Length: 442
Image (tube, rainbow, N blue to C red; front, side, top):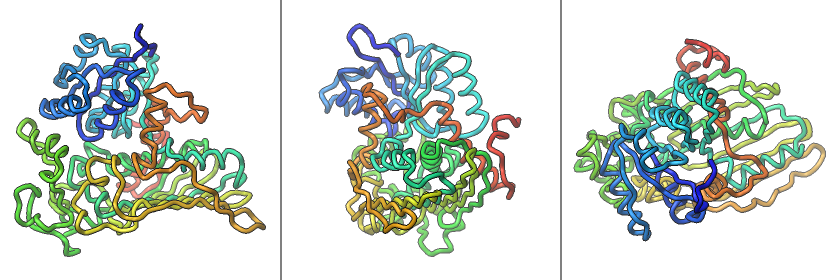
C-alpha cells in the first residue's frame, strides 16, 4: 500500500485483546514516522476503551472505535490503508476477506485461520482481488532462526535429510492455553494450528520446501477433566472470586494484573468471556501432547513433538544432512517458580517481558570428520520473543529492507496451517493425510 501525502500508512486494528498491544505500541511509538493508527474494531467496547486509555498514557490521542459489525463502514470512514487482524483465530478470515474485497491489504496474526474451508476462502480472495496478506510469523525474525536459515542455505550440513523439532511449553505458559478460548478447537484449531503453525512455518522456510504428507498422534493427557487423575485439580470453574483457586499454581489471577483486569475482567459484562477458566474444568477439546511425522517436497522428513505441560520451557531443533548435523537448543526458562506460576508468561502480557528464571541458547555444528563447533549466538534477547517482535514490526510496519525475505504470504500461512490441519485429521483417523487433499476435499 502506497503511503499518503504525509508519508504515513493508516492502519486499523481489529481485535483488541492482549496481543494487539504489541502492534499498537509499534504503530504509535516505534514507527510513528511511517504509520498512523486510524481506528479500533472489536466485539467488545470495554477492550477498545482500555486500549484508548493506554494510548493516552503514551501521549497519543484516542482513536475512533467501531463495533465488529461496523468493520466495513470503518474502512471508508477512517480512510484505512491496511487492516491489522488480531482477533480470535476463527474470525480472521471474516476480516481478511472483507478487507481484501474493499481494496485494503492485510497483516494478520498467525494462524492465518483455523480450518481448510476458511483457508480456501482467504486464498480465493487474494486471487480475486490481487490484494496482499502478510502473516505475522514473528519466529522468522528471531536472530537464532535467521542464523539457522543462513547456515542451512549456505550448505552447512549439505543436502538436508531430516529434521527433529521438539517444543516444550511449561506448566505456566502451556496451562494458559487451557484457561482461555484456545481450549476450544473450533475457535483456535488446537495447538497444532494456533501454536505449532509457527514451527511448521519455520521448517518450511528453513528447508525451502512444502509439506506433502503428515501422520500424527495426539491426546489430551494432562489438562482437562480427565487430567484430574494426576492430583492437581481444584474444584472451581474460574479463578476470580474462588477460594479454592487462592493457592492453585494453575490459576490465573486476573485481578493481580492491571492490564489483564482491564481487558478481560472489566470487560466480561459485555460478552461474558472468562479469561481465567480452571485448566482441569470440562470443555477442553484440544490436545496437550502431540507427535507428528511429516514428509516434504524435497524428500526430507520431520519428526515433531509438542508438550504443553513441561517443567521447563524451550525447544530443540536438529537438522541432519549429507555433510553433518546442526543443533539448536534454547532454554527460555529452566523451571517454573511456584510463586509466579499463576502469571501469564512474561508477567504482564504475552511475550512482552522476560521470565524470571534462567535461560540460554546454544547453536552447534557437527561436521563429519571434525570436532563439533559452537557457533556464537547473534542478537538474541530475552524480550519480545527473542527480539523477534521488534525486528518483525520494523519490516512489516517500518518498511525496513529485508534481504532474507521474511514477510510470510498467504500461501506461506496456508502451508503452515495445512500441516497442523493434516495432523489434526490424522489424530482423528489414525491414517496419514496428504496435505494437498485438504484444500480440494469438500
